[in-house]
Structures are given as C-alpha cells and as structure tokens.
Amino acid sequence: MRRISTALLLSVALFAGCQNKQEAPANKVAAVPGEPIKGMDRSHKGHPAPDASFMDPDGGEISLAEFKGTPVLVNLWATWCAPCVKELPTLNALARAHDKDGALGVIAVSQDMAPQGSIEAFLTKLKVDDLGAYHDPKMALSGALNAQVMPTTILYDAEGREVWRYVGDLDWTGPEAAKLLGDIPSAARPG
Image (tube, rainbow, N blue to C red):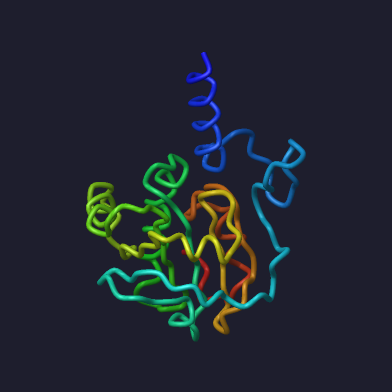
C-alpha cells in the first residue's frame, strides 16, 4: 500500500504541470489557489531574455541573445507532455508562415534530458520540420524563466524583452493566437 501511495504521489508531481486540467480563460487566474496561472501572463513584461544557454539544432550552444533583432516566440515543451505534443504542429505551421518574411522567429526548445538525436527523431515522426531541434537537457532555460508548466510560450520583442507568456497549449494558427500576436508589429501577425 505504501509503495502504491508513493508511486501515485510521484506520478502526480511529475505530470501536474503538463496536465490540461480545467483551462482558465485567457487573462484569468486559475480556479485552484496555489495552482499556476493558465493562459496569458503579462507579469514579466519588459524583462530581458535570460542568458541561459541551450543547444541549437546542430548541437552547438546558443542563447536567446542570438535572436535579437527579430521578435521571437519561444516555446518550452517536452516529449512526455501531451498538451505540448498537441500544439507542436500549430507552432510548426506558424514557423513555416514566417520563414519567408522573417518578421517572427519561432523556436520550440525541448526540455527533455534525452539525447538530441531522439528529439530530432520525435519531431520527424510528428512531421514537425520547420522547427529546429532546439534542446535544453539541463533545463537551464525553463529554470531561468521560472516556467513551472509546460508548455509555456514566451514572446520577445526585437530587443529581447518579454512581451507576454502564454501558459498551457494553444492552437498557434487560430484566432486567439492571431489576436495575441497582434502585440508585435503587423508584419509578424499570422496569415
């Protein structure tokens, strides 16, 4: 009985941040006290991107400073997180839409401890080919951002300052995302 209780508590703790319990509407506080806010969070607006380094698709070190000069949407995800996996194709479509105009960078940074090759294979299996296999096996970026729930997606302006973060999954090709992305120059809006 004690083993079952311990295993159950461990399972709940590991997956609590990734679960898609009761989604609160955007800009609303979660219904359960002490639970992370889901939806739009502007409490970090103006904060500079952290210096934390992670791996680029070629296995080299990179930081968010490399993206200065263009607004960038940074998504923190993991292969074991069902809501993360659900939204990856929509992030891929958003990235594809902006590959040519260069008005918005879109990167998804895996928070898995697995080798980078397994992240590449996972993205290939999902046919997510417009997002590079960015990888943060030490979870330095999510730690520096104090991201407690995955997925968390953060919009940075061209100067590397946070505009907002969206906690939880979202269809990044849908009308809510288009409205959210209206916070950046019109050339970066989906469509």
